[in-house]
Length: 420
Image: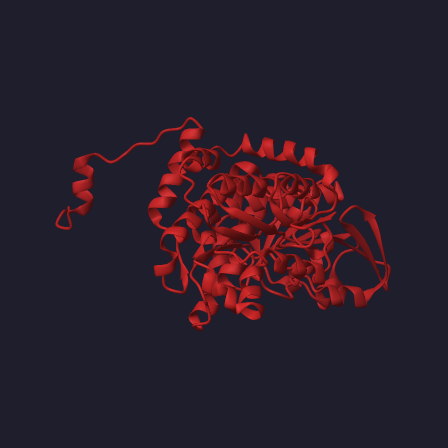
């Protein structure tokens, strides 16, 4: 459904979307406390924020918070299959300028991003850096009005750090992804739970007893491996980095090359951020009935061209589950078209873990609104003190307290002469 300042699938879904966001708000006490704290002072008044982030109920809570702090907001989804149409409809009905619906084509995806730039943002919020790259490649003049931007995910931060190192960034970026309260929680526990959720919704298989291959043992891969093991699977990890492989071994996981894992795996989940992790030779050696999915940002980790060339037939057997029949009769099941299985086939990360990630986003944008004009045009980290404060806030909402160092302990920590 189109309007002057939005395009969504169906505005009639708005009430359902409001209920989803209301539920998420009840699970996100840190972000809600920040909303109440800044509702009166409205530090984002006068700022226009263009966002490119998965349109989920949790994102809806963030957008509501940004608006409560005074910002005008225009939004697009950062993945063609991750938009929850109910939430997009609710946000449009509440007055947010939003261009997002489930099942975008590539052309529609970038059209939506460009519409969010029509109102000339002063701040950007990105997940994967597609919005930032659109500004830099097609609308560089807009960068003169932009104080800065935030980046939510590992893939985007890597791309933007490379861009900053080359001296190509036109405005400062804050790497929200690299905050401890983001990637040690959202990336591990959020990705782990939501990826397993997506696999189960798309397949309804039992994980206990299955050989579950996790490609990549970064934060996201570790989370998937932990949750798969918790469901009773025998977990194999593939890696290209020796230190990460060693961590996986010491966590009790099997480690082997992908060429070996392809022959024994029942379920494969890529979590690397790199293309061509699973390619033709791997498909050729997989078991009949193997299930393949991806939880990395882009759909290039599983080589879909190779799979389609090998297949003599393809059919959808369940929502987000396509059966590819190979020439010898073996069947391979691809979930969510190789896109993010946790968002395309499920609802994304639980609200509780996105609470801290989106609190970091909110505080990062406040900092850029205050200081962005004077910040160097590179990728910046969030301050360590913010991590600690958000973690303390989260613990308090859980009814938990921790110890603190005494004055004597603080003095001991700073006394370099102390020894045996």
